[in-house]
Image 1 (spheres, helix red, strand yellow):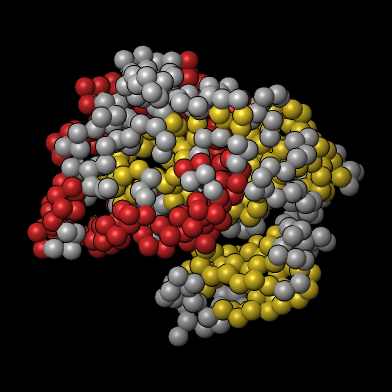
Image 2: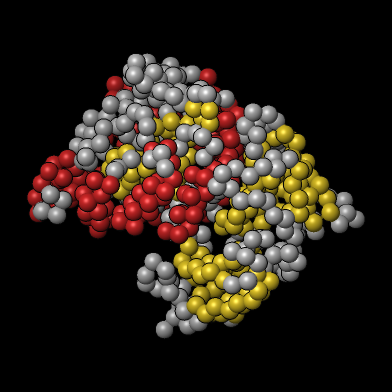
Amino acid sequence: MSGPRARSPALPGAYRPEWARPSHRWPARVLAALVAAVSFACGPSPAAAASAVPRFTLFGWVSPPPDQTTPARYAEMASVGMNVALPAWDDPHDRDENLRRLDLAAAHGMRCFVADERFSTVVALGVDTPEALARIDSIVADYRHHPAFLGYYLGDEPKSDAWPVLQKLFPALRARDPDHPAWNNLAGIRGFGDSALWVADNRGYLERMHPAVLCDAHYDFRIGFDYGEFVMNAAALRAWSLEYGIPFWSIVQLVPHANVRPITQGELAWQVSMLLAYGARGIGYFTYWTPAPDPQVNWGPAIITYDGTRTPWYDVVRQLNLPVRLAGETLATLNWVSTQHAGSVPRGGAPFRGDDWLAAVDGRAAIGRFSDAAGVPYLLVVNADSLAAQDIGLTFVGVTGVSRLETTGAALWQTWRPGSTDPAAIMRLALDPGEFALLRLEGTFSSRVSKLGPTLAVVPSPAAGEVRFDLSRLAGDARIEVLDATGRLIWSREAPAGRASFAWHGERDAGGRARPGIYLACVRDARGAITRRWSWLGGS
């Protein structure tokens, strides 16, 4: 990441969250919805919930420095909406200091990535030597059972010369502690200056490290110009997330520094909303704590100043995180289908194409399409203008109702219903700069036959041994995908235009075989997508 670094140490359950406490101003019905979403996503087992990566994360780079690592400061981080803490500014990476931070985080419902200075000794000894492995055993033993521990921070934006060490550290830690991932934040496009080098570097990292989470940082708004590559970065993260079967996070620009200019509230909201439209499972803010003064970098104010004072960004981010976290927890239970852009198409984006439910869009908007396990469609609609409010018009066909996720008012989902005699109905959304709206569509979707997009039949269901996918009305760029109930990609194949059939016997593209359970089959082409839910009993 261009900017402050928590010094890299190694490389060339049962707590009530602060936002759930009576002193926090988030509405009780919003808190209940968040608890329900987290419970649905993590499952009923406390042990499983404690060991899993959160389904949706909000964090800031970086955490308060050691002399500000206090209960009040961690309550402050939790109150702004953060549920994950990264290493501190000027972090000593000391074991006792790490455990103190973990205790404070746990008391406020947060999780921590931990950097430990002993990894430097591990590298110096040679990761696969008995002495180094013994030190890894000690590191794991110190943290793995702490309820606030999330994973092992192994440095920011590792270059390819660090990969040989990481290729040994990742599996060594995974073998000893499969519940807590090793983690790096990667450089965005501007870290390379060339998109081809960026793609090659990210793929190389993914194929060698097999991380549990993909995360990068991209800062688009510069003094005198904008790169116009934010959507390209988000779309690539989405594609790699699907290909490698892992969630993705991204860190957004907030604090001005060097040639990174100050941004508006709308530009901050626009970055976050676009990432939600592409199905991001985590949002980071650069930065939370303002780094130490540096005349070469010229840090502007972050959410908290270097001397510990809240800036106006604190209340801005706190209010933004309320709908973001609620929407993020909801989207984490859904299957991402596509993201398209109406009005104008940014670099790396796909143009909007109507389907049998959303036929047209009036205005500049990004449309993220999602579906639940029963095939019910959801739309994440983003005002694509980061500087001006817009009145976005959505033309629905055959929809009996549209519910919007709200954070104000009496009901969590506010329902709009078209006239009963209208074959097509227009819903209008008044959105502030960069603002989003999460919509749930109502209708008999499971029995409807698409008139515009592809069709898909899954037989038999439940299936054992073999299941067949029959596809028809395929346009260009068609693909069939099998996903598990959490949306992780299991298997996919390209499909020719027209008609096609595929047989699946439980194989996983990453190797091994799928377990029995509930799966989703999704077909996408240039015009739309269709999803079917089915049961897999396993193969012989």
